[in-house]
Image (cartoon, rainbow, N blue to C red):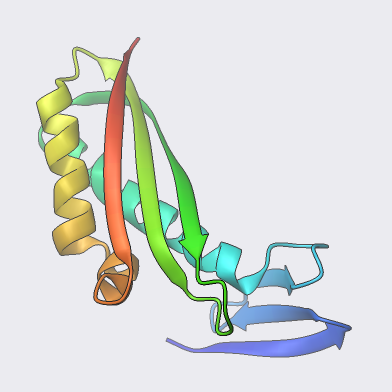
Length: 132
């Protein structure tokens, strides 16, 4: 996997993937910051796992959202110290236990982004089921 970043102006950069996708980053607030993108990566990576696990279990899912809340150190480097992921999974006849298990498997076993950080960051999760 390869990514390149190119300075645009001030604190704005464009990240380009080897597949040609681009993401704008800006530490001044004009676009997501690199740290926000790390948090988004955890939400995206783990949500993909949750959906795949539930679909493999033949669960009828209609939506999956992940809301993340993070705390950062007060000093430089302002690393993440705590991350909480809250999953809201919608579907028909979903069991809360199945959704909880899928979230647990993702955060603790499958999500590369979360597992990469879990040795230095306290990562927790919660979930809820919305019946459709």
